[in-house]
Length: 407
Image 1 (cartoon, rainbow, N blue to C red):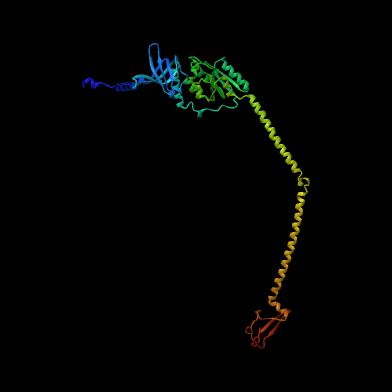
Image 2 (image 1 turned 180 degrees about the horizontal axis):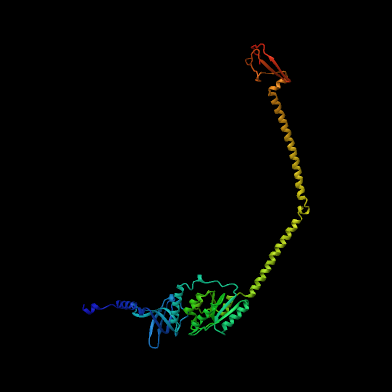
């Protein structure tokens, strides 16, 4: 094998080498192209294959299903578009192609990419978080309007606000709403509005192209709205048009009319609610009054109300009966106590030494008053006292004899 044969590459190796070169080149991994769509097809897998051409050249492109689903329009052959993607080689065929991750109709793509990056940055800072959004007051006293002077939008908002809630004060801060000077003028109008005691601030305009609405994507204006002293409503364009002020505002509506509806209540609805509430109040209290009347009628027919004396007559009678029972119980108790005392008295009398005196016995005592119970307690010649039932006898002992009596 000669030297040239040793250096020879296979086709597969060559194509893989080319792919590696393409994939390593940062310029080829961040490609913006503008051209005309040709042979655009979406396959059952959801992937799209097409060509992008100009008047002299053509390049193959593929867009995976994930990115196809994110398209904001339906591409068709002949559309002038701007795409973004990366360039690589498909080794099996040896062809290079663009792997597209973004597509927009020509003229809007670059701006939308810039806008997408700005939105991503502001969202990362938390300016679009739902948690920071404030509730609109139910009954605002003053509303500020930032929109074009003499425009249909301002006339529409003023008319609808006054028709719905004429009690509110309206402050108008006219401003340019499109063109190169619009962002700066809108910011000026916003700063002026912050000097007034507003309950709600509406910023908006009627519909228009994406370019017409671009002033409402200005970063300085978006940051200013985020710092508003009062809740804000963004009413820019129609339902399909979304601007950054829509994301940062406390509430987003699609039309100026929608802004008026969101900002103030409808007086007719309030009147109807008041009427309904009044009717419910009448019904509720009417029902309560009827219940009270029925209860009163029931109470007034009770015997205690028909004859008030009956309230205490029965009690008085019960009290008298209780008194009689108490008197009787006391008398019975007293009689039992008397009988018991008499019994105890008899028993005590029978046990008393003085009781035997009535039966002819006497109590002997010495001169010192000590009771004599034995012959050993006296001597001959001693004086003794005999205590009888009716008096005493003093005697002198002449003789002491020892003797016992049968019991």
